Length: 112
Length: 115
Image (cartoon, rainbow over all chains, first blue to last red; front, side, top):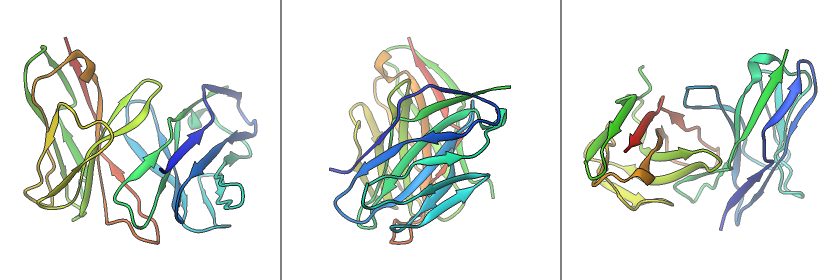
C-alpha cells in the first residue's frame, strides 16, 4: 500500500542554518505530494505541494522538488528562523483515492 | 468564511461515557475526515466521508462512529470512552481528490482526556 516515511526528529538548528527534512514515499500510481506544518497548539496547514514529477513547490522560503526517480520530496530552507519552529508533515494523495496519507511528522526547533 | 470549526476545544470524560465531537465547514467541501494525533504516531485516519450520506473507515475506526447527513457537518461519536482514546482529534475537509492535488483544511483540534 501507499506510505510516507520522513526523518525522525526532533531536529534542532541554530537560526540562519540550512534545513533539510527528508521524505520518501511508496505509491502505486502518480500521487500528489504535500508538506504540511503544525505550529504549537494549532491544526495543520498546507505549506507547499507538487502534483507531478519534477514540479517544485515553494512557500515562505521553503522548497521541495517531486523526484519520481528517487521517490522523494525533501523539504529545504536556506536560512531558518525561530518562527519556523513547528512540526512538519510530509503527505501524499492519489487521484483515484479518497484519502491523504501522512508521515509521522518531524519536530523542528530553532535556537536564537 | 469560518473554515473548519470544531467543538469543544477541550473535554475530559470518564471511562464508559459517550460524547460527540462536532465538526463543521462552510466551504462546500465534499470530502471530510477525522484524524487522531498521538505523540510519535503522527496523524491516523479514523473515518472519512466523500459526500453527504457516504462514510468509510480509516486506519483506526474502532470505538468511533460517524454520519454525514449534510455537506457541512461531520460529527464523530465516541460510544464508550476508554483511556486509549485520550488524544488530540482533528477534523479536515477538502474538495474531492483529483489529478491536480487537493489541499486539506484542518480545524483547530479537540483535546480529549479519558480518565
